[in-house]
Image 1 (cartoon, rainbow, N blue to C red):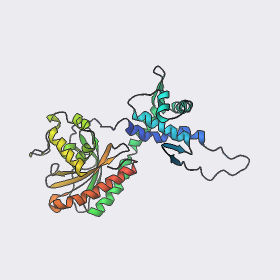
Image 2 (image 1 turned 135 degrees about the horizontal axis):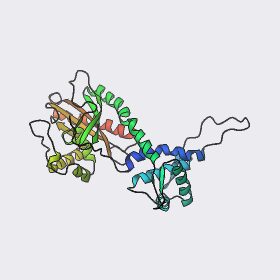
Image 3 (image 1 turned 180 degrees about the vertical axis):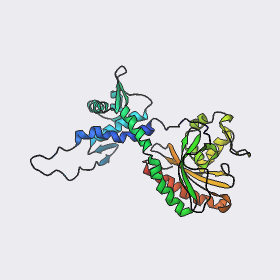
Image 4 (image 1 turned 90 degrees about the vertical axis):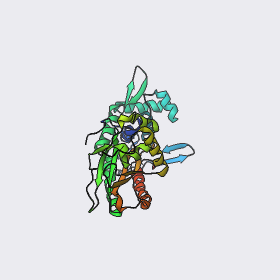
Length: 315
């Protein structure tokens, strides 16, 4: 099936680059690593774990260089443009001298880029490479597949995991229940997000301005069958998404495949941005409407668990 758009919708700048930030701690960790044993003395069995202790509003660490490196990278990832070192120091409450030292190490390792003319620092190519590696390793698929398989075992219905891709949802995991009919939501398939429960769950978790940008006019809405979808204009979509937000999960009634219904819940990252959606699909005549909320609770639980696994914030 052809996609309505090939533009990947990204979370705010904080999204992928924030995942990359964790790997950059290696650059600073060397400064705090224990020296190798000399004179025949045995080396420690293992390095002590980094422990964060909170006192009031301050956070301390046994590995402050690594901690502050990650804080700097996360701060840069959250901004739309580069920052001056003095502003970084102020924002994080760090001494300027420490910030300059850490930025120097990160620049040498490619995690930040110093713009000499502007006297500002931005993310470097190494941060981009780590974020790309994060995508290549397909962590959502790897984490989500066993969780969906367990859900299918419990409910006896098929489940899938989808992400937003332009105005479409792209299915990245499908777990088919035994003795259940095949679905169009196979891995790699794209469908218009406003027609699917997965898409509606994701759209409901986006800022309304983002949804409006995705659906600027009537031409953005399509239907799969001769019978027109009930959602064919922005005002209807907006009203439907308000209901999804209030209810906590999204539904679909035969708009993708006649006779099949779906229930979905969003998977969200650490800033609440919808990363994906967990959904189950079933023959509607097998599941009375009064049983949908109970099934939705199971779907929501899996979505929340996956959110936690990716260090996100459950809806």
